[in-house]
Length: 432
Image 1 (cartoon, rainbow, N blue to C red):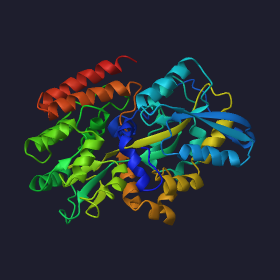
Image 2: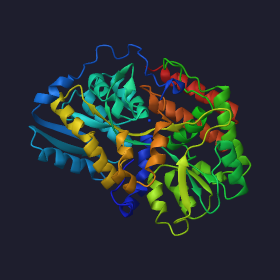
Image 3: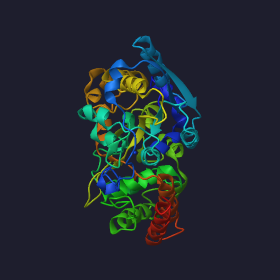
């Protein structure tokens, strides 16, 4: 997610719905992190070259609405270490950013030495051999990173990037209505029914994939087989999760209108005092602090567990990757090393409220002051899982959110919706 430095500046993040395309597992999600041989022959990045790297590199990213990338480039260039970085910005739309990257990689263009990669692009780009294998470099720093963030750059047993920014959703609640937050989804829905309800992102789009998988994974469900070649979404665990969400709308725990909500409608409903609970990304925290009806009357906690299951969140964020066609990969790595350093990570957290990927950053006193919910954020990130890691993720996600929305809207019963999703996903998997 993209955020501004000061809390007031975060009001610009109303466009933050774009971020959900970046919402990023372990074997329970069918992440495909085990070696399958799909990327055999991929080029490896020589981490040793960083010491003598020189020259100019271009880093490509979506529109830098926060300003942290521009400032990072400026500060890096001021070091005078022999490498100069340039930032090339693409449009804000995540789909358009992806298209821009794909066009260049298909053309074997070296225009982008490195780029800001959405957490769900890893498998697709690595499978095409468009990325350099960064395993040696990242493994040398492995203990520095929150483990879940490394899952988003792992595919086919290799690591394809360095986590720069992460995110995970919270459960928001009204402190004037809830004295003690229930520990399970079932208890929260029951409490919501007796109060003003719960809102979330239930529209037919990427956000719903995230919302559904948070509950489904917590219930013990999976999307893909461990080898990533077969759908496993039509399972008793996933059916239990979907039936739970459907029943929540039927019995009034969540409003029927939630089936049309993306991030902003859900946020506005909560800020207007129309809901007791809200599943939402961290960006809404700062905006809520400025909302008259809920100012000083809400707090956040990591997502709850599912009765009989466990806890799960969905990881968001961006990773820094190196293009196979870069003419100066060593210099690109030098830039990435700086941008993901402890110093830069702290600066971005304090000034730009960027969610850190490094463990130590969350313990820094200045970071805790700048991000009052830092402890809760780290918990949320630690329990988060990747969405299914597959080269055809966009089609898999579409199969999930379209059919889940159909069930939530009453157009299909949950069992039929999962059966259709299962068929759609297997068709998508058969294309690669």
